[in-house]
Image (cartoon, rainbow, N blue to C red; front, side, top):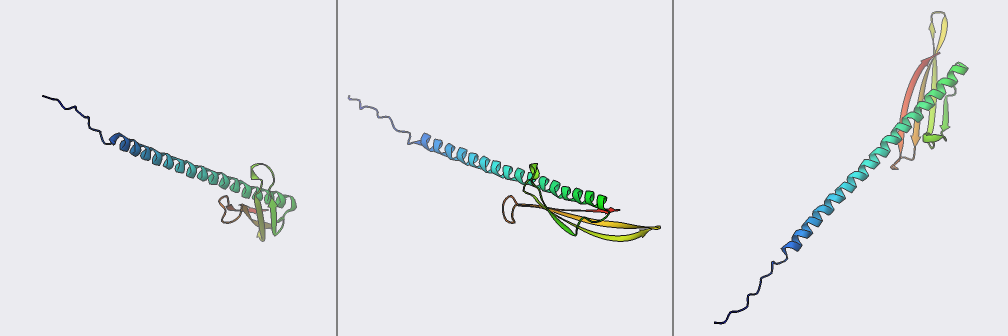
Length: 139
């Protein structure tokens, strides 16, 4: 009797298909992590710019209060400040002031309404930010 040689059968490439599936899953997970990281970074940038805009608007209020205290009235109907120092560099601040008078006992008092609008960038750009603050003081 003759024995015929045994020919091993191939597995059919199952390991290759499994490896490709794992690569696709890992690639998709890496892409999702990269996207989330990018979104988090842009969110952080927007939050920092928003805080800076708030402080820029606050500096406009402080400027107007200082001017009003030293002159006894509104510094001007409208003033534009361009900030050039430190973290607020590049912000444009528009400060408006309106004054009304009222009588308190025998004294006339000035009630000042101060509005400060801080802006950075141009509308529609990813780095655009705007803040509007108001304050009222009596002199």
